[in-house]
Length: 181
Image (cartoon, rainbow, N blue to C red; front, side, top):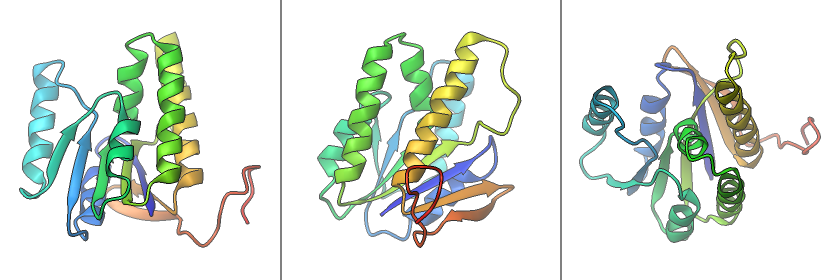
């Protein structure tokens, strides 16, 4: 089962996703964040302290497909956070071809995965369109990634002010053309 958890900054999406994953016997937390400055280091530390001590941690800022492939047949739940940081990591490399290849490999790995996955991403489509080219590219890539992930997901939850709103419960499926079946 794939559960996509979306939300804005400080919406409570991380806590919500951790609660969902915590129902599993074994959780591997896959972190895409890198501590590029002191403020980000503090954010990472805050997240680490809020998680259960028995969760394993894998820090992988780029190659999520390999992590999903490695653990796809396990009894473990993978909690992957955060897709928008992953997009940012790739955009900052200026390796468009590498990003497209890894995104495709990641989506394929998710399709083949037998383990449960909880994936966290920022919902960036509700804000203003940014002025800068890199910022617009980030919003575009994040939005397209979220659409791809939601079409694969069995469940999609939008978290606002700590409350989860069920967008997709697994009963309706995206038909790939903007409708549901």
